[in-house]
Amino acid sequence: MDNEINTQTTSSASSHIAALEAILFLYGEPVSRDMIMRLLQVSSEQVSEIIRAFQETLMDSQRGLLLLEKGDAYMLITKPQFAPFLESFVKDSLKEELTPSAVETLSLVAYFGPITRAQIDYIRGVNSSFMLRNLLVRGLVERTSKGNTYLYEVTTDFLTHLGLARLEDLPQYGQYQETRKNFFESDETASIPVTIDSEKKVDDHLDTSCI
Amino acid sequence: MYQVQTQQFSGPLEKLLELIEAKKLDITTISLAEVTNDFLSYIEILRNQIPSSGEEEGLSPRILSDFLIVASHLVLIKSKELLPDISFTPDEQEDIVDLERRLKMYSALKPLFLLLRTSWQTASPSFSREFMKDLPPIFYPPTTLAVSHLETALGNLLQSLGSLVVETEHIEKQLINLEEKISELSSKIAHGISHFSQVTSASPKGELIVLFLALLHLLRDQTIRVKQEGLFGEISMEKITEQ
Image (cartoon, rainbow over all chains, first blue to last red; front, side, top):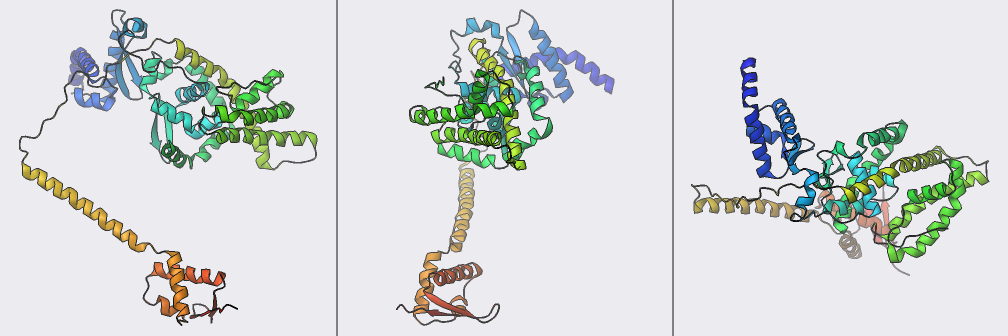
């Protein structure tokens, strides 16, 4: 039985890759792993295998596309080196400059996300609710509700603007994860922002209402 | 010596770091004490500056308050330097250690901010297709759809709305106005009712509580005199006649 499945996988692997390409092409937005499993009738492990194989074929210099990975979702994007040919007819809506506080906030969300507002405030020494709201509205940052607080992370739009296929491709990503560990996971530092968190969701709501 | 950019100014940690670096000091408690005066003068400048440039991070008092928190810690450190005999509470000690730690963290992250800024300005973007581009809008009503279905659906909707309305009425019944009860109670006492149980006999619990609050209010305002014999005993009330 196992053998049968295996041979099936190998024989249908290339057709699965092609099918995935078609799905991602048409859909446009990030497609979740669950959705791929459902559409292709494959297991989660098979999805990983198909993704890996697909990424390999895309690495070919004759291909103009790239597979963006964010969390458990995938999206087809153009390779950043072709931007000069594309920019003339596709507008990059994120072209505008970032203010220093936007840069600070966005850096923290990108490199240290998912992150709470309390943690951002703690590092910046400034209340960041206004700036986070601004970035949310511009589609650079998104938030998910966790318990009684919000976790902020960057969007796929942020990644595509920087021509990145995944968060880990940010410059010196690994190095700053170390920096974070040194400050956040040593002694009691980690507990400080967390304890402030409990009241923060209410705060975020208030901010929504005043804008 | 101090520069306040008119468009956006540094946050408190950034400013503090700037002051320490300008004196070529390390981030230590001693160097924090040393820049306290500079930091306070900066706040003074900021205070005059804010009305014209306060849009950057939201409300201007909010920005000032972020600075004042840091300033209060600095003053604490400075006071220790001037009066070595004073001792800090564990909380104060933690605040100072915390400030040092945050400054170091901010200092470690400054290159990151620069890095992101540069990437943002120089990176070539990727592009993606729009969600379901080129697909016409789809509306497939079920083949079996009949007018009666819509009617039933509307009926269900109205029914659920109806239950909401009942809910609202229920809540309104619970609303008891303390002020009304005060004047009600006071007028009843004026009309000769002298026992609290006479007022409350038919009242539900919520109203009873409010009536009791009303009683306390009247007592506080010295409009009535109240007497109670023992715990849970009858309360007798009497209007205080004005001299």
